[in-house]
Length: 298
Image (tube, rainbow, N blue to C red):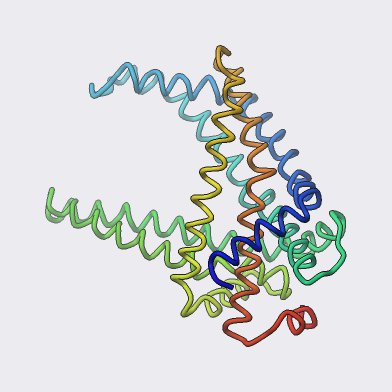
């Protein structure tokens, strides 16, 4: 498929199976949104974040005093703890389950098979451990990238001074480009893990080999989908955000959480559908499979 045909297929498939795909997304995203809200309330996230924002606006460019740093220690800690808990739950529970279940459902409907929410999640749960392993590998790689970037800036800064910092920043840009390259090359790992029954590492290797030679195309499509979903999310967020006008900090924060959950339920499946179709399209392009052969092999 061309880029236009692939995007048209993704949105058409979503439209024809809207209730099924939205229900699959809601099964994970709604409980996750509730847990997220509970974590934020227990840690006082909204108030802590507002304190940090107010301080940043009021303090400007003035250097921080010891008392100011001590006063910000509590809010920063609460924000960090809440963000870490929610982030880990998202990476290792919500995202793998939603992605796996949606991938299974989209695959079945694309190959003209009957499916349901229950069937999709039973398949997703069977592939949860490999998906978590894949997430662990990618998270560890990301941490290494960040650590390497910070270390480069420090080393060049200590060795050459201000000019060294500039060199370190350029090295960080190169690392960022490489990180995007790795992300693109491993972007087909989730459907490979779910649909081919691979382990986390095998899924990453499979994606790496599949994407070889078509990386620019996949990068362009993923970037285009990111822009489309960001625009849709921004418009919906702005319209729904009007409901929070005039509310206090906690009220506005609650409205933002509801908006985030709404966007996650209805917008995030667009990305999962597109990645699944990209997986099929890439296999057909590189391995010469047609839909009937794929249906028999999966």
